[in-house]
Image 1: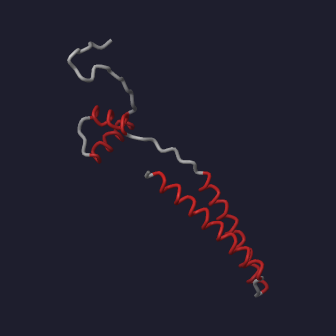
Image 2: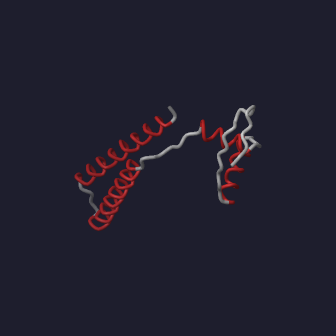
Length: 117
């Protein structure tokens, strides 16, 4: 049990255990922030810092669309090499897929912009 100092502004002790690696990371971040006092740094981060939890479902959807579009493009290229012709429907399909990709990218960028607010 710690001794209470009645005149001390901060009189509640919080004990924190970290690994050596975590301590090294904390010290690196302290150095980047120009802070020397670890207690002050950890207190500031605990009170004023924030945690960002990213929902990556939009990114996963974009990766899925990229795979589909890449596969379609490869199939069209293979057919074009074999037959020396490209079908209008294939081009329209690729254009639709690219539109989906751009819409998905715009949604992701919009969501990232909202993080700053």
